[in-house]
Length: 107
Image 1: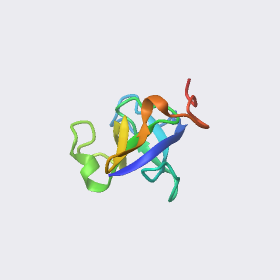
Image 2: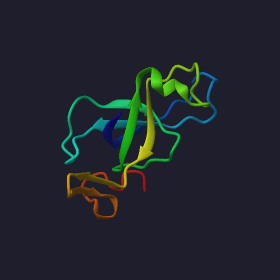
Image 3: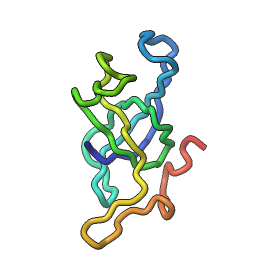
């Protein structure tokens, strides 16, 4: 799993019929301190994440082990929305105190 920030969304009017009303979000991998690294990717979002939120993203074959994604063409899945991140005894992220560009992206 990786930590990522939701930075955008993808709308597909035409898609395969394997999933009813899928939501696809663009996520950017981040470090625990929030620094963006790597390239953005598109992930299926079954948990209702919003712009600017930190999320846990699963990738690869493990993504296809849920009831909704079994044997489906999914490479990345948002598995959860992060509330807090601590490194040792230091709290480096607390969702209630998050701020910055994109925090209200989908509001």
